[in-house]
Amino acid sequence: MRRLLRWYGAHPLHLLTMLGSFALAGYAAAQLLSLDVFGVAVWFAGAVIAHDLLLVPLYTLADRSAAAVFRHLPPKLPAVQWINYLRVPVVLSGLLLLIWFPLILRLPTGFQASTTLSLNPYLWHWLAVTGALFLLSAAALALRLRRGSRRKTP
Amino acid sequence: MRFRIPGRPRRFFHGLIRRTRLAAKSGLSAVSGLVAKSRMAGPPPGPFRQSFWRSPIRGPWLTSVFGVMLLATMPVMFVTGLLSYAAYNPDLSPVNDTTPGKGLLGFYLFSWPTHPVWLYRLNQGTHVTLGLILVPILLFKLWSVLPKLFEWPPLRSPAHMLERGSLFLLVGGAGFEFVTGILNIQTWYKFPGSFYPLHFYGAWVFMAGFVVHTGLKLPTMIRALRSRSLIGELRTSLARTRQEPPDAGHLVSPEPAAPTISRRGVLAFAGAGSLLIGLLTVGQATGGPLRRAALLAPHGQDVSGGPREFQVNKTAAEVGITAEQTGAAWRLTVSIAGQAARAPVMLSRADLLRMEQHTASLPIACVEGWSTDDQVWTGVRLRDLARMAGVTRPASALVQSLQNGGAFGQAVLSAGQIMDPDSLLALRVNGADLTPDHGYPARVIGPALPGVHNTKWAASLTFQA
Image (cartoon, rainbow over all chains, first blue to last red; front, side):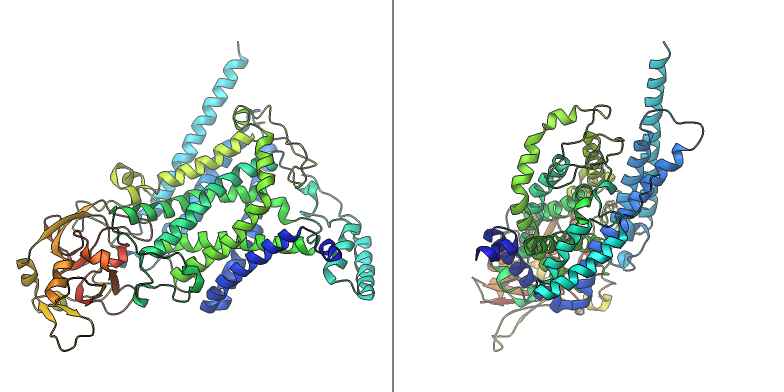
């Protein structure tokens, strides 16, 4: 028994919890998979893959590229963390797009017929919010730079 | 840019071959063979090496702050979700049951109350709005633990293997639930099957992972949260931001880059995301002045003052309701189930208008999280119609719509829902006849009913004695 547990690598309670969890998940999954085995499996794994192997590398790459590109551009940017003034509006706007892309890109074909609402405004709303975010961010950066330069010149 | 020379590929493969042979000989499992091998060879280049991860602010404290936010809110998501299912009264009749194979998972069901009248509105507004607000928190939490995805060795022991399996349930389940929910509220039905069973069973799979993860990580989380003071962190500027001390979970980078954002900055960043999403969404559930700010909510558009005055989710045209069906020839059939001998009562709209009229102020609240403010409905009480059919204490009532098939063309109401004085077969709303899209000539409206159970274009009421 002790050898078995050493092989397992954790407390017996750990094993018990795990088995309980998988039993519950299996019970629910049996119902889920009876709907459309392939489709559900693809969507479950797809959610993980889309996040871990698509979204994460993309945002990491974008962040590092932005830092690399701007670092080598003349004139040298001042010492404030200007990258956050870029990160914040880009990420917030991206979040909105990530959530609402079906409406923004007008994908749900039956939307107008069932709700009587037009699909047109969402794209413009998203663009307007994005614009406002960048403007706010630019204003905040300008304010910060001005305060910084004032402090330097006595 | 820094590039690292890929380390010791030769030794890696030799080690692999040697170990595999050894494992085969000694009869060890493939898992422990691989485990021992990878310990010897060291991680392959790339994200499997700790030095690949350079964020100076990753660490157990930051992860735990996001963790505790999710720990407090995900159970709310789960419970409001389960309550929403209960609100359909699935046990009352197969007609109401969107997930007929639920088995033991329906253990908690109860008869859905009719008061307070905004109960379903609150439940769904919370479920959907909170879910949207949590998207940034979830993504920041996942970012904070990214190095764990590339742990090396990938499997240390059978226990570790099971744990990573349960993480797949957790992360896959979260992704599945968020994506199906978010697509459903935008009526973009691209998921593989009916939304209800997918979202319901998916939630249980997620919870199986969530409970185990909480149980295993709770001590670590508490320890990490105690390791630094929140107030102290909120006072720490970027210039004074230092790494958290090295941790057993290897979240703290051994080769940190210079910080570009403070820990309080990251918290504010995620918070700003949640706040923005909330602000652009919550108005579709609360109504009032916030509705104007609901620029990206599916039902955020203001339709007041227009011909419909308030939102709908199905139009007469969409479900094939014609003017002939709802014209002078329309009759409501009121009957008692299983009593073929007794002729059903047939009522025209004029007959209904001659009956005692009642007025009730009730909202319409959709499973998708949008709702209307209270509307003033006028019509005949359902319990009066039951009495007219010859039942004083009905057990339930099947309401069928003129609409030709489709989801929710019919619903079964419970005894409590029929007998409530505010449950009406409405003929008018806000002082005018119902419009075709609101269910003319007559529709059900009841307190705290899920939106789709307020059957529009009523054709028949069948009471169960």
